[in-house]
Length: 596
Ligand SMILES: Nc1nc2c(ncn2[C@@H]2O[C@H](COP(=O)(O)OP(=O)(O)OP(=O)(O)O)[C@@H](O)[C@H]2O)c(=O)[nH]1
Ligand SMILES: [Mg+2]
Image (cartoon, rainbow, N blue to C red):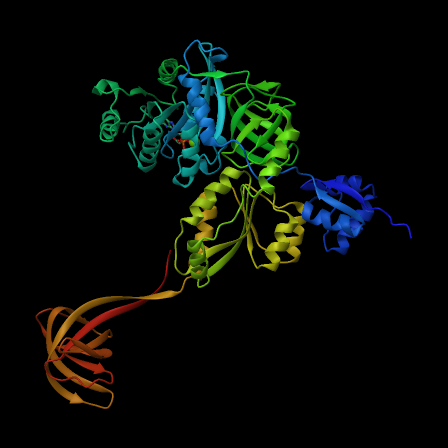
């Protein structure tokens, strides 16, 4: 019998039902029917993910393949890139091929000290007003022209949650602007940033901001900086500082002049003609444009049509856009650019490199993989110990989806910092992009909740979640998401008893001994006795029993409390037989819910 050969189809990671039907060459209603057989209710414009589409395609007699071209190892590392940049910087001024390049200036500082407002003032935009929760939650890069010179600015978040992004901002910087609000002074994230800058030896310009505020205290800021070995010029040091108001546009020109001066001293140059090297500062899957990476080109020139490798992901530049989303044909050193055409969203901090010959680059990676050069999992005893320990922990099952890699990294870091011996998070899945029906199915089978940060469910996923009772929560502000997860973890914690010692009583006389109670008299020797509280009986420094205290009387009158130095009578309720000379310890116990 003649065997019918199955047709191979390539399906994108996320595809509309319409497009999917086109790929298969089938009618839309046939595809929808097949989806329904699999309990997926989707209409023509709904998107489904590859995991669903792949199953449907196979059911319909196709061989499905996800439309990605990914390898597993990367070639260029950040360290190697640093080394190349250093060489370019240190090369003799006449070295052939090297040309002046714009400085990359990273704006850093504590939350709300005015970094984004400063950039708005420089660029005459109003980004700040559009930020969710009034804080910056992404790293972003822009270019402006000043006195004929182009400057690249990188804005970073100041909220403590984003230390990884700040650190990344520092690694990109040729020069840093340290923003310190004059009404607030040096704060924890100011200090964190100072440490990064010192470690990486990045030259800095200090911007003392908000000088328009009535409670601004510029001298205090300078003092606090001097305490951390950042001595401003007019205090006899070598750090330049501008006193500015980002909001009222005061001192901005002076600040920019200072930056241009520092840049001149730095003598930044690059080889514009070499194969491009850049750093991925953000990446995500755009529903319209596909996989997108925001890249800061460090050296060389990235051009349309160029074969590229980012981390381990291959592709070809299909389209380049500048930070204003205008199409550009090429991007030279220090230019932030959006790269469209990668087969997957790369990781932040991956180096994007131009490759001369995609075929041979792929082949050499394949070789590395098959020869076991990388990716060999080593046995890790610590890891094992941890996983055994983890088994006693109550787990919150979670699927976490974010808009971009940077947020996933930030969230991972913050949530990882929540430490408890009793509870923890078990990630069923973490990823970038929309919440899809596969996420919902996974959540359903593993009793997980789905949390999205700037990520919302597709229509199909939403419907499926409603049918299968899966919870989806989407957030726009990172710490609101973190708070909710903390709340849930805390709800899983047990209770604990908090004991407060109130005082001690020396027993002087026994007045009556009953079956379950005794009336005794004594003197409060420390603290106080309180009616209705717990008591422990102590004899010769040992606790021998426990009971309750009632009918507290001072001078035969019932009272609530008797203080140190006074005599009193009590009814002790308990099994222990008290003797003269015993000490009764009165204490309060409270059962409280544990917190993280
Ligand atoms: N009075 C006054 N207010 C300012 C000035 N600069 C910024 N602000 C205000 O300070 C608040 C925080 O400003 P942002 O620019 O969002 O601060 P940020 O440093 O970017 O904050 P994060 O990115 O979240 O760390 C906003 O309400 C601004 O309007 C200034 O020079 N004077
Ligand atoms: Mg900001």
